[in-house]
Picture 1 (tube, rainbow, N blue to C red):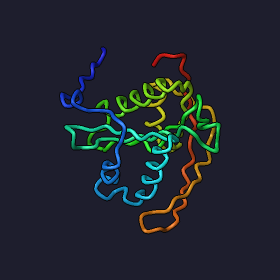
Picture 2 (picture 1 turned 30 degrees about the horizontal axis):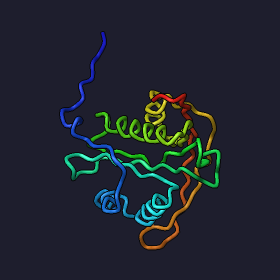
Picture 3 (picture 1 turned 180 degrees about the vertical axis):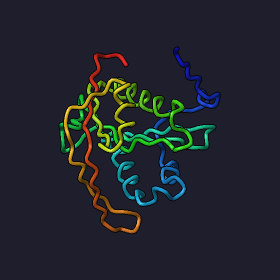
Picture 4 (picture 1 turned 180 degrees about the horizontal axis):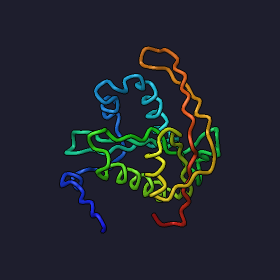
Length: 179
């Protein structure tokens, strides 16, 4: 027996677009991610100089449902080299909108944008303790290519240094000109 999943009616009203400066407060998700405020500002500054992209999924021109950041150029060229390889990170969908197609739409929008810019390889990390996330990416053609220690740090909204340790799988997807 085949089960057909019918997307919710509101899904067709979701717009996938580049984030604007006015979107940054909404990326904090009503305070849940306020600690990333400085990080979001840094990513937006990288967007302004062509080193990154920020994409959002928005419903009814007012409700941000998800976000996805893309690093186009990194000091770690195995992640993003500025020419053919880009790195997706900061990808999340609000809990009430998961498993409805929002994440798939956002990922597809990012892939289309990267192809338009001639990128042919996308890398991303998924936490090793997130098997559902790994399965999601595998459904869309990503494959595990390495283990990442997942150590990084950032300054939170109060200026405190936060150390993060998220062991992850590095995954990649290659394109031959078609999504």
